[in-house]
Structure formats: structure tokens, C-alpha cells
Image (cartoon, rainbow, N blue to C red):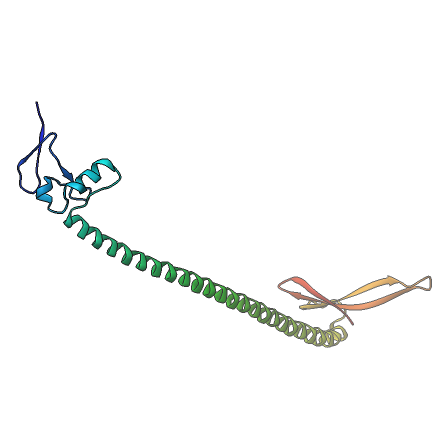
Length: 189
């Protein structure tokens, strides 16, 4: 039993053993050599002896040309996209570097400002404590002369005794500064 295929151009049967042309393009047509119109007998023999030689019909060659054109355009666009991506990465990296530098400088300046502020506030507190201690010392002397040594004020005067060799003992007055019941400073008078 002989098999046949239908010609894609004239729709007539192409019997087994008869010459056929195969299009290796996307259409995949099978046709009679006379229906192809592009290949003569020598071309058919060349394709039969050289299996690497492939035929593409006119429509497939046209679409192949368009495909090559589209492929070239796509490659050109892809190249531009890759270049743009590299430029964007470089720009973003530079911006991150600048922002990091600016943030580090701001942190450093903020630290210096905070340190200066704390030192300034500390100095103000020390000055206030010193002023209160001096004022308390004067008030305490007045209080002591009026009420005796057992007054109960925010700044309390105490006696401290220390040995001074064998000649006897030396007494020193000093003031304790209390804030909310906690001792925060001692001042010798």
C-alpha cells in the first residue's frame, strides 16, 4: 500500500517515491517541485545529496527576514536597557554613598551638639549647686548662731573629725547638698 501526502499548494496527493519539497520554516509545507516554483531539478538533487541544505519557502524567508530585523531591534533595545541599568546602579550607589556620608556627618554633629548641650547643662547645675552651697553655708552660719548646731535644712552642716598627729584632733566643717533626699555633692567649708 502506498502512502501519500497532500500538497500544501495545490492540494493534490504526492505519492511516495515522487519528488517532494519540504519547507523547514515555521509553515512546514510539503509541496510538488512544480508548485514550489523556486527549485529546479538540480536544486532538488542538491538537497537530496546534501542533507544539511534546507529549503525555506518565500513566506518563511520573508518572516525570517522580519524575525532577524526584530531580533536586531530587540538586541539594540536590550543593550540600551543594560547600559541604563548600569548607569542607574552607579547613580543609586553614589546617592547611597552621599546619603550615608551626610547621615554620618549629621550624627557626628548631633553628637557634638548633644555633648556640648550636656556639658553646658552640667556646668549650669554645678554653678547652681555651688551658689546654693555658698548661700546655704551663709544661711547655715546664721541659723547655727541663732538655733545652734542642730538645724534641719536642705543643705545640712556636719562635723567631721580627723586625727592630726599626736597633738590632738582637727575638726572640719563641710556641707552636703541633698536633692530629693539624695546626697549629690559634698562641699568643704
